[in-house]
Amino acid sequence: MKPNTRILNYVTLVQDGVLTLDDVPQDIAKEVTKWVRYLSGVTDNGMVKDEAPAPAPTPTVPKTMPTNVAQTNGELLPKGGE
Image (cartoon, rainbow, N blue to C red; front, side, top):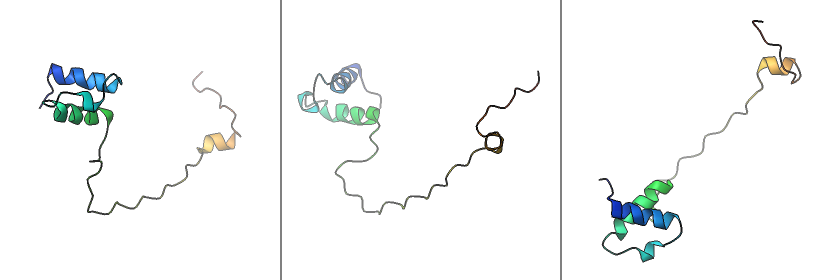
């Protein structure tokens, strides 16, 4: 469901630090909290206990330099097509 103008106004005030979530009227506090969390990029449920274990991180492979840079010792290659 899309938020109405009143909810968006309070979301903006909370994001700007003018108000806290405790200052929002009770009738829209739940919706304002939902949209503040959504717009700030929060993906977890905070204090909700997760029963499933977190997946193990995948190992990263170090990046290698392209062969044309390694062969020129970091010098720029001449432009082609001129």
